[in-house]
Length: 332
Image (tube, rainbow, N blue to C red):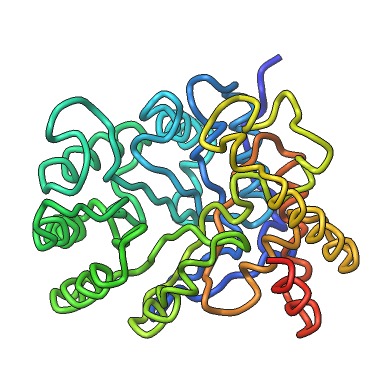
């Protein structure tokens, strides 16, 4: 059977997705964005990846977050997305906000990672080819390079915008001092830093504690959170043991050593609070990140349409009472 040509849901902007202004800019991002770090590589089924992308767009998710080395293997998530663009999304390109990044290990040798102009320029050119795109909406420096002069990295971002290969630029996981330098450098060259991307969840509150969230807001920059579920720890998945098909069992980024007795105790206590709110733990964890306007969007991963559907329920209730916040704080 030949699959019918994709036609998005006509109600995609009326199904409950809310959009938040990204810093001081004209960009509005969905509260939930879809990340392609996992489950979109060449080891995964294209049909499932395509189903998830279609479902996301049908539910108002307009932002798809990628990086050069997402997969596995490296580059394959972008290739998968490029096929989805060609087969489904090309007529709707102007509705989509597509990001990619460079900074982590991508190819061998001294010019295959970090923040040199040579690496950033080469990587973006490759990413555009893989994704069948003329430009990305935002291109990130994926991590701070302590060796390369920061001016070189940032000037490459400026030139990428001026070449029309990205509409906006952002930074990811930068320490506070380097982020401040980046904000000022880019601002002085009329290329505003649109987004700061950082790891932020109930178990990892560094952006809040280190002042990264406030700093971004003061600079008119949006903040987008990745790993809002702490790689799956902030779900009910591990409450009764480690499932065979889980990330811990597969030996991926999340290690068995991270699921200590203390962490498990916290997970169970948070799960009870979520139940009192009428949410699953995953829904509450996502809602918690979105509880105030200092966060523009959260990036979620998914391995199935069903998982994506469950996570999207979080946007129905992103407000917390003082009592609930106190309970959560006492657990953490």
